[in-house]
Amino acid sequence: MNDNMKKEFQDIEIPEELHTRVELAVNQYTKNGKKKSRYPKWIIAAVASIAIIGITWTFGGSYISSATENLMTQVFGSKEKFLETYPNEKENVSEVEQHLAVVKKHLSAEEFADYSQLVREHTEIKNKMTLENRKVPTPAEQKRLNEIGMQGKKYEEKIRSLTRHTLAEAQKMVSYPINKPTFLPEGYKLEEIEARTKENNIGKDPIVKFQYRKGEFGFRTIHEKLASKEPDEIELFGLKHFVSYKVKNYKLVYAYSEDTNIKGMKIEVPDKGYKINMIADVLSKEEMEKVLLSMVE
Image (cartoon, rainbow, N blue to C red; front, side, top):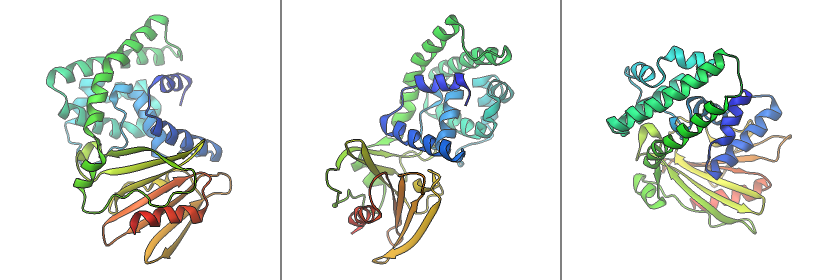
């Protein structure tokens, strides 16, 4: 990510839970010299496309249609213009295209026209900077970029709101139980509950997260459909070792690395069709196992 994109990233307001996840992932991948996590990639794509392209969690492949080429032209001027402006984002083009399709579907014609104009103007400023080999916008350019970001927040929020749900709403979408842990390590308290669905599958197959914290330390659990094709949460942190084993007929996977205190664990409940991932920092393997078992029994 270049310096200018880093500056844009710092200026975007990101939900605290997502900020924590990205920070952990970026720190881990920087340490390992890797860039495999889809979350840092997604952040780059969002920044490259401006914040109003959408603060979302994932992009699926089923919604996109042949119309996306026209959407890229309508919003960015052309796919070529997008890549000329953001040459390092070639691998993220399909994600941006899919998001544009969702935005087009859920904004009114007037809203999408305004949205498109904002993104197009943003791209033109960035394209000029790229062609002139400038990393820092002029004061006038920065002022307009700030205005565009503020004007676009209402569209960003409208799309985001479609994918956010209450715990009760999420429970009605699935046949399996979404339980909080009945066992908690000493001192940990529930900090946040998040239930969301994907942009290309709004209102179906929710992903539910419980975030717990004890001072500076924390852990989170992630309920989702067992058949999900998305990478498991424990696969997104560059952990090196994965140990599979069974407890009480449940399949568990413990993930860890010697060079980080971040640990992961997954439990699968195949007869009910769901799984729970867990990410923690200072908890022991035994404590993580107790937390997960208390959520399925």
